[in-house]
Image (cartoon, rainbow, N blue to C red; front, side, top):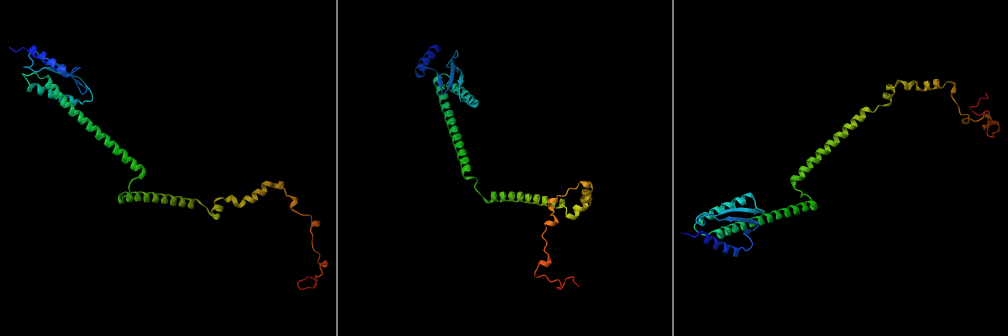
Length: 220
């Protein structure tokens, strides 16, 4: 009759010498519990804690444990199961490293391209130049149309002198109305006129060249 207890104790001693602190592999803690008829039946196992693992990674590990346990029935298998999980975790870690390196390179590439655009601008090609020119010409045409419309409207609103006179009939009577409104209160600045005595009028007789019978005179 198989002494399951002894086999289990012997395996525990071996595992404690290999893993003196705990059954921990790459931030993942596995818990194994011997069943009554282990190793002829699979042990109970569970993942107590894990970090940096996706849900699908955890599912893959549980499937791997079930497969390995079935293949190793009749033999002590905890070490085999742990080793298989370690190898799986190493693969996952490598995938994580590769993914992070690719993400880092992608970010560096995007930053480099953004820096090039910042200092060098967008390279001019025939396609983007024609696109820019078409947009520029359309905007310029719109500005010209707007300006012409404004000038046309301004020309329509500007009245000639005749039109202005015909429009405002009060213009022809404005001066008369002004004088009538002023009445006798019109003030004249006398300083604008000189006294007649102060005017220096030349006397013809005092002029030695004066000839009263000269042609054009009124002596006749």
